[in-house]
Length: 203
Image (cartoon, rainbow, N blue to C red; front, side, top):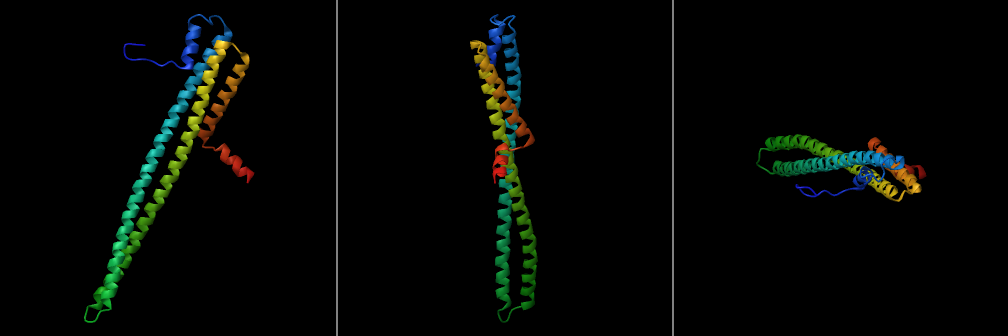
């Protein structure tokens, strides 16, 4: 505990303190584990940062999709208003004693305006779909980074248990879990979905 609050120790902190207090001084096994946990903690912190960044990207992309969708909805409402005016002009053009040429001109103008509005609305809808797709991809990457980070945290915990129990078989388990975490991080970095690829290969 410090004067500025409290500090929660993680497995890596305990492992380093264990060696620093002399319990593992001159012991290559303990020193190697302490160094390994420091490396794993650094890798885990990097994975955690990248996971947070992709989560922020997913939220930003989703917000952009919502804005584009709202803009598209407004454009379609405007399109509908023009259609209503066009229908009224068409009706007026059929009435006796009115300036048919004027209303027919209005009908032609509304038709032209509607074409432009429709194109704009469709563009905004396409943009919304594109942003949603980007958001889904970013969120998927976030989940991959989260899994990679969790694997590194488990590896650090196993390393601390290995240091305390001095069970060498646990060291092998630590290496295996750490390797899985690094592989998951590599998949996230390369935007590869190994599970999806397996399902695709199966079909």
